[in-house]
Structure formats: C-alpha cells, structure tokens
Image 1 (cartoon, rainbow, N blue to C red):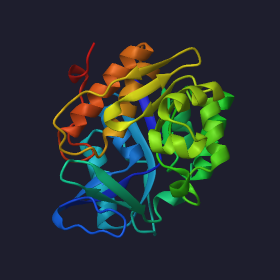
Image 2: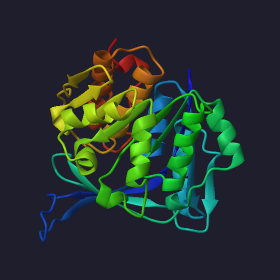
Image 3: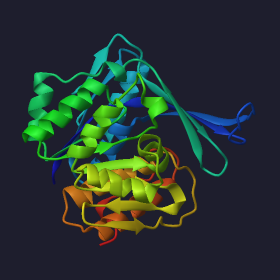
Length: 303
C-alpha cells in the first residue's frame, strides 16, 4: 500500500472521565482516569497503518516515560517512529475531559511538539512518500516548509487538518496566512466546523466551498453528529454521520481524516463514496474508548 508520512503532534493523552462536562465557572467530578498515546499526526498515522498503509511520524518527545510510551504505541500499530526524536522538553500532552455521553473537551500543553523541525533526512522521506499529512498544530515554520515542498512538486500530495480555532493556534501552530497557503495548495484540506468558522466566519457548508475556492483539490468540513460537507472546486455534497452507540468521540476526526486520505487522495473514490467511507471509519472509532480504540481495517469500510 501507499506510504504516508505524518508530521506534527505525537503526545500523551491524559483522559479524565467526568460526571459532566462543566459549563463556564461550573464544576465536575472525576469518575475515572487513564493515560494513552495520542496527537493528531500520530493518530492519523496509526489509522492509516490500520488501513494497511506504510506510515511514519515526524515529531518530537521528551526524554521521559511519557516519550517512551508515545514511541512504543506507534510501534505497536506498525508505524515507523524513528523520526520521533527526543528533546530536553517534557513530552507534550493533551488533557481530555470526557463527559458521560462520550463528548469531550481537550486542552493541550507541553513544549516538545512546538520544537519540531524538519531535518534533511526528513525531507528525503517526505519526497519519497505518496502523501504527507500535517495539521495546524505543527509549528508554523514546518507547515510553511511542507506547503513549499508541495508547491514545488517535491511532495506528491499534501493533506492538511486545520484542527483548531484561531485563538488556540495563535503562538502555537500555523498562522492565519499559513493556513491560507495550505488551503490554496493542499490535495486534502480538513477542518471541523468550529475551526472553519473561526477562520472564514461562515457555517460548515459554505466553509467547504470557500476553502475549495481558495485552491484545495478536496475539502471536508466536519460537523459532529450532523455529518460533514465535502467539496471540490466543482461540487459540494453532504455526507451524513453514521448512527452508532457512542462511547468516546476522541479521535473520531482523525479517523475520518485518515479514511479520506486512504479513499479519496490515495484511492479512487468519488466525493460521495469518500464521505461514506470516512463517516464509517469515524463512527466505528466512537464505539470504543480512546483515540485509537476502534480504528477501522479495510474490511470495516463500505465498498
């Protein structure tokens, strides 16, 4: 199968199962606690490995137990973690606050991922890949480099996930003009409805068409249980979400993105079939706990 290199976040998720998701100035009680490896780039790479692709991650962790766990989890999924380098900063983390219905809030921290930078060896691996994935959580300079590599033709295909709203990205990840450059260049541009609205100020359907108008070959804007809007420069379609008993929505967006890379960028699926396939992958992942609890295999996806 195709080779994919994911660049960006590989972190430790600290998951708190709560009595309720608190409102502003409200409270909640911790019912359970666990730690799992996560991060957008790492999750997408693991999901693609589960779909039988050769996947690798470029990231950075600390010289600590958390870093050991992040690298070991990637290896368990068959993902090449040799480019997940060690630094003196503590491993980056995500505080995942999960409500009783499986919905969640995520707060990120740590300095390891913001220190990610591409080496000459990384660039060689990117040139050899069939697709490169990154997100707006990667450092701004890294995203700019990847956009430039795609524009020059050195990278065969680029998939980009807007990932978070502008307020979250400021000083942490891709700047607004870098996001615009990614939208003008990417072979796949993905955003959730909140992130899309913070960047272009419109709802998910119109946002999908606007990002496509910027130049992205394929666009998906997700809207939770309301499904997603998929767009090309020629058309915009709605992809309904698949109804399942939800255990945990953590990682559903990453599973959705990986399935789009698999079926729409690297495969020959049309826009409607790509939406059905990605919705199935996201729904399956919601039925298990954790960002990688229910990753789809090829046999789990609709034809």
